[in-house]
Each structure stands twice: as C-alpha cells, then as structure tokens.
Amino acid sequence: MDFLRLLEGIRTPFLDQIFQFMTYFGQDFLVLGIICLLYWCLNKKLAYEIGLSFFTSGLILQNLKITFRIPRPWVLDPGFKAVPSAIPAATGYSFPSGHTQSATTLFSGLALNIKKTWGRIICIVLFLLVGFSRMYLGVHTPKDVVTAMLIALVVSWLIHRLMASLKNTKKENIIIAIVLAVFSIATACYSLALLGSGTIEEAYAADCCKAAGAGLAFALGWYLEHTYIHYDTKASLSFQAVKFIIGLIVTLLLKTGLKALLGASVPSEMFQYFILVLWIIVIFPFLLTAFTKNRHKKEKLS
Image (cartoon, rainbow, N blue to C red; front, side, top):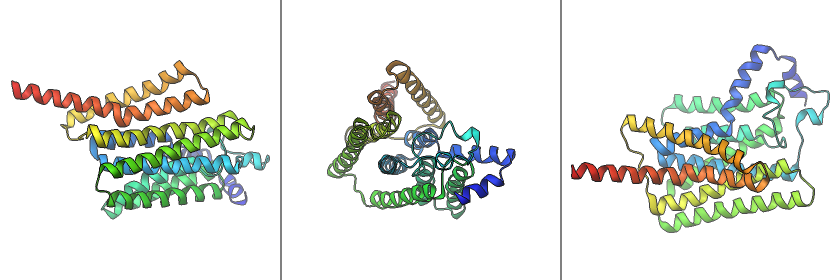
C-alpha cells in the first residue's frame, strides 16, 4: 500500500486521463478484437497462439482470484482512494490483475513473433504501462500486477514453444482441445462449488464461468476448425475489410443481444461467452469458407 499511496500523491487530472486511457489496452474485448483481426484476416497461427495463451492464463487467474479472495486496495485500506473513473471496471477480487494478464498475454505474444527489435520494444512497453496504470489508478497493488504479469509471460512463452513444435496432427489437436476443455470445466465446477458453499458471491462465480465458457468454446473451436474447416485468411484487401467489419458487428450484436435475451445469471453468462467465442473461432470462419468456395465455383463456371 505504501507504493500506491506514493502514486496517489502524484496524481493529476492529466495523468489520470493518460493512465485511464492506457488501461484500456488491457480490456478483454480489445484483446478479443485483435485476436479476431489476426484470426479472420492476417495470421491464423498467431491468433491461435495468442488465443490459447489468453484463455489459459485467464483461467489460471480466475482460479487464483477465487482461491485467495483478496479484496481491492480501497477495501484493504478504507483511507485509500482510487481514481473514481477506474472503479466501475474494477470488478471481482484484486489478486491477480486481469487487465495486466490480458495486456501481457496479447503484447508478449506479439513480441515473441515480431522480428523487428523496435516492434518488440513497443509491445513490452505497452504491457508494462498497462500494469503500471492499474497501480496508478489505485485498483491493484504491485503484488496483483507482478503476479499477473509473470503468469502471462510464462504461459505465453510455453505456448509459443508448444506452437513451434506442433505438426498439426489430429492427435495433437485432440489433446490440446481436451486439456483446455477439462481445465475450463474444472474452473466452472470449482467456482460453482464455492458459490454453493457461500464462500464467494455470484458475481465472482460469473466471472469464472465466463472464462470457462470462453475457454470451452476455444477448445471446441480449435478441434473443429483444424479438423474440418481449414479456414484460409487469404483474400483481397477490400474483402478483408468487409469480413472484419461484418464479423465484429455480429460479435457485438451477439454480446448485447444474448445478454438482453438470457439475462445475467451464472449459467447464462457462461453460455453467452461460449457462443461468442464459438462464433469467432468456428461459425464465422465456416461461413466465410463456404462463401469463398461457392464464389470460386461460380467464377470457374462463368
């Protein structure tokens, strides 16, 4: 708390806005948006690597959150004040930091695959700034941030090595899908058990089940896409723009529409994130692949 109080003492309205902006680079939906861009348009293998790191480290984080159940800094020390604009997004337990995990997973994954030194430096600076912004805003302690960063870095590095060694066999794809699916289901069961015993509140179980639903969909999508769809990102620049915009619009409509339709219960939130990620990884690529094949057939006949 001493370090947070030091940062509290140097806050200014200008710095508040700067670091509030920086923290957006750790938002889940920004990470998902970049994964969508990579997966649908640019580099499917890189998208799989970052996605697998993101969902795996996210599940680890959620398990740690509900195991240690450490409250936010202003709860630990009622005299401490966080930046007001940062509080609404600071849901769930404090340890470890979810924004830091998201940003570190994304930008370390990019850094591991970028050849230019300046590109790697930018990526490293970005996730370090996101971590620092969480402390400056007063929503996380150094322990929260450093732990999340270390978890994300280790997971990203291990999965980077794994991806480099894969030969894309059916057996490999089944094993990866099963391991992630089991981990996702175990996370959901663990959180529901704690909820049932009264150890955690429904909101905390919902966060875990969202991560579990997303992880389960990614696992299923990994197997289905690698085995049956074989989606190809290649397309003209204009079609790349069209498919990214359409895909993103439908993703946002699904997010808002499913929530309005199904409500905010724990099972419904898990289902919503399952459908959302399944759309990104399986359904939309399947539709694009079918459309492309049909268009090529028509071109050959004409």
